[in-house]
Image 1 (cartoon, rainbow over the protein chains, first blue to last red):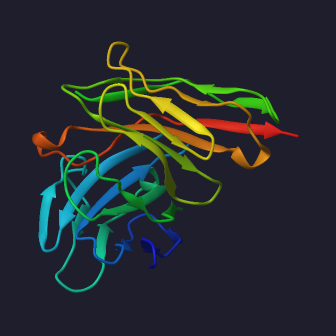
Image 2: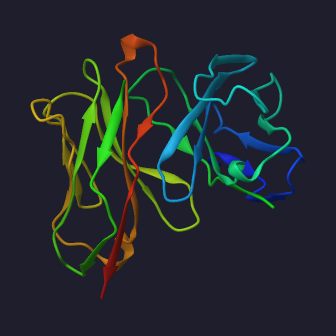
Length: 115
Length: 115
């Protein structure tokens, strides 16, 4: 049973370009979470999605960031017009059910570098 | 709001030394508590968890006890190995009845074990 998959593992973009990060949850998991980890910091929650629905986006920046989890295919975190401050590791996690206490399984992360 | 405060690192220990990494939290009700470990270049892996007061989570020689009275979840290991070198994150999630799903992370503690 494959774990959470993220691609690409490393992504380099110039300022003003778009970044697309993909996440395939574990088989049987319908809940996806995105977190951002700035250098030397802990992870910060960004958004929680179920298939075709954004459930909680309280951690998402109001501009340039968007996320989706379509009926078919991976979840996508999209960052438009990237800036240097977007450089970070972006982690996706999935869980089989909702609610506190349920383990979230993390992917290896995508490390975004903005030049 | 919910938050997690972790002992600042980095921590450097000799092999077979005793490890304690302090973690305290602020939350309403009875959150679930977790320790995650991140090895270099990898995503987070769940190390152990506890979902109610006085529960003890344990795995791979690591232990942590959910202390409601001191709002703490300190991580301990009696004898560390070089392979334990990693970054350790304390985290919490709100109780299931709140409907919340995201994890709140501490800033992480980097542990280096030297032979």
